[in-house]
Image (cartoon, rainbow, N blue to C red):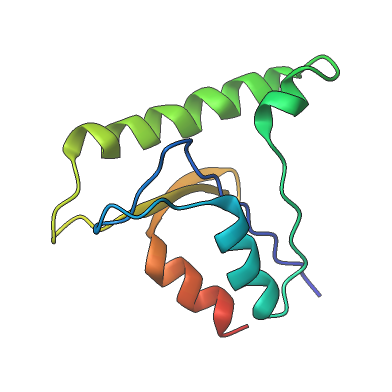
Length: 106
């Protein structure tokens, strides 16, 4: 039985199309209400911890690069708000609402 792990990264100051702030507490509530085990980590706190591995450093760069590509492209009806994630060691993007819908259906 393969475990499914989902990581959601929310940029500081993230907003939806209507300009409403997307906060970790809201995402945590949605996922918790769907029966998921949710843990919130503020990266600044982790960064002050132990030494990051090479994988940690590269992953941060890879996720940041992909997120930046989408930020520079801007949000349009054709490009909805999305999440950037790691799946099977590949960087992927999913529309935010699609990701939430998939999580809710589990």
